[in-house]
Structures are given as C-alpha cells and as structure tokens.
Length: 459
Image (cartoon, rainbow, N blue to C red; front, side, top):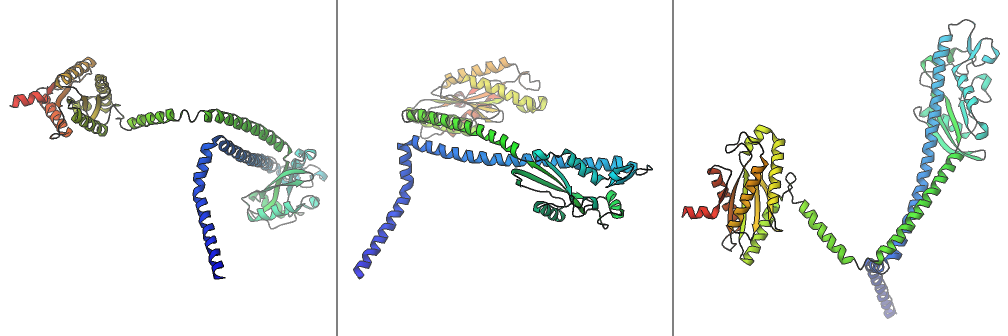
C-alpha cells in the first residue's frame, strides 16, 4: 500500500513538472509557430482586430446616437424655456397694466383673456408635437391647475421618477431610452424652477393648487420624447459603410501581408543593413552641433581618439587645426548675438567645405573655436588646408568694424602634426595645436602657425 502511494506521489510530481515545462516552453513554441506560419498567425490577429474594431464601431455608433438625441433634446427644451420667458417678460409683463385684458390658464372662456406663461408653454408644446411620428412635448407638474388635472400630472413611472429625481437635483436633467408604444424613444426632462416673477402670481391665484411656492422650487417638468428610428437607421447605414470599409482594408492588408511575407526571409539581411545604416545616421544626428551642423565637442574627442589609435597601428601622421574667430566678443557686442550666430554658421560652412575625404572632420570645439581633424596628412598638407580656409573666410567679407586685425571677420589657426606613439596622446596633439593658435594670436591674428615650426624656433 505504501509503495502504491509513493508511486502516485511521483506521478503527481512528474505531471506538475511537465505542466510547468509546458508553460515555460509556450512562448518558444509560439515564436516557432509564428516563424513557420506567419501568414496564418497574422491573418488570425487581423481577424481578431477586425472583430474588436467592429465592436468598437458599434458602441461608438450607439454613443453617437445617444449624444445626438441628448443634444437635440437640450436644444428643444431650451427653445421652449426661452419662448416661455420671452412671452412672460415681453407680453404678460407689459400687458398686465392694460384694462380688459386678463392673464389666465382658462383664457379660452374669458373675454379679452390671454394664456399665462405655463399655459402658453403647454399649448406651444402640444402644437409642435407630432404624435404620428412619436415626437411629443409635455409640461407637467405635481400641482396642475384644475382645468388640467387629467393631463397636467405625471402619466407613467418615467414621469414620476423624473419629478422625484429633479426635485432632489434641480440643476440636473433626467433621461433614458425606452419603448413608447411600439417605438424605441428617447425621453428627456429638465426642471422648471420657480422664479421671483412667478411666485406672487402662483401663490395669489384663486385656482392655484399650491399657494406656498418659494423661489427655487421645482414647479414642473419640461419633457421631450423623440423616436430613435431615423437616427438608428442613419447610424445603421453608417455602420454598414464602416464595416464594409474595414473589411476591404483588412482584405487588402491580408493580401499585402501575403505578398510581403513571401519575400520576408530573402530580404532580411538587406533590412538589417538598412537598420544599421539608419542607426549610424541617427547616431550622427545626436553628435552634431545644432547651430553650425558640425560635429560637436564630444564627438570630436571620440573621433580624434579613434584616429590616434588608427595612426598608432599604421604609423601615419595625424594633423589637427584649431581655429578661432578673431575678436568675436567684439563682434557680438557690436552686431548682436543673432548676427554672431549667423557669423558662426558662415564660418562653419567654409570649414565643412575644406574637408574632402571621408575621415576628415570639421567640428565645433566650443564658442567661436573650431577644429579640423586631418588623418594621414602631414604639416604641409595641413598648411594648404589652412591657407584655403583663410582665403575662403576673406572672400566672405563679413564686416567686423571692431576687429583688431581687419575690417572683416578673420580666423587665427594653429596647426599640429604628430605621428602617434605610445609615449604621446591625442590630448598632447590638442595642446600643441592650442599653443600654435595662441602664437598666431600673438603675431597679429588672421594667420596660421605650425607647431612643428615653433619647436624649431625654440631650439
């Protein structure tokens, strides 16, 4: 018996382990299935997406129907209320002082009688109602006047609920969709609030069913009932068009997927190469100075270090030109910083045009300073580049009346050329170029000085 129980436990453990392995292997199996049968998987996903989109479109349509019904009802009720207020102030309010004219809810039986505002609103609603099409306007209350006892109170549970709710929430509205007869209709109500101009009249009229009205009391309800048949029909037609469009789009998408996936494996390497090239391009965007569109200082240091390492391996010369716009602070003070930015852009274009080979780099070193990296170029070749830059800057003829060297913008440049070795560093190359630049400034600006020649002079 004990042996049998142990066997059962082992079987249970084995089943549990098997289930766990299946759970962990499921993503791998799903990936393999997708790789082997991508069209089937994608078609399935598209169909699921289509189902979700159709469901979403349906609910969107229902919401639009509700929104349209509410909007129409609110406009209609507002129109009724404004008509009542206009009648009350511009007709009843003015005519009270006229002899032989009496305002009454039973004006039909009175010579010279006109309807009071509530009666006017009720009869206006009755006249614009379209019973055959299910459009009904009603004004009702818990306290209808005697001549409207049969029709002026709530007729069904909805109207009773609306009255009770709006008495407690006079700032709100009450509505819902329900069957009215054999038609689905939208029933909307808003409260009629007792105003100061109406309190005295309602409390003093002999036939008023309630004589203790106060300002702010809910004295009645304005209701509009509108059928939703036409709106639903329009929405249904819209849904059919949406469903058809979505089905066409999904069908085209499936066809496109079949065509694309058929060639997917053969162009995979090409896509990877394009992605790699795009990554390099994006990386370059992140390493470019925004103002001048030249390589920024951080990228300059990185590229210079790379060229130094390459020069170590190949034992080829590496030249660096540091450039500085002469008296640039004076330029900014004289012409303004916007003009200074334009000046930097013009100079940057000249420097960018001076680099001809793929590994040559023009960079913004900082402020008005620039740098040009010339791999495998000796000091003579670097001097030719500097001379070309100097001439091109002169040709720009950018006015600079506060310069200490010329009436136009000029550059001072320092050139250094090293053959990289393990007892030197690229930082020393930068320092040498900077010393040469400093010497160019001391000699009167608008010139270039080669660091190697400085060493010969010092010795």
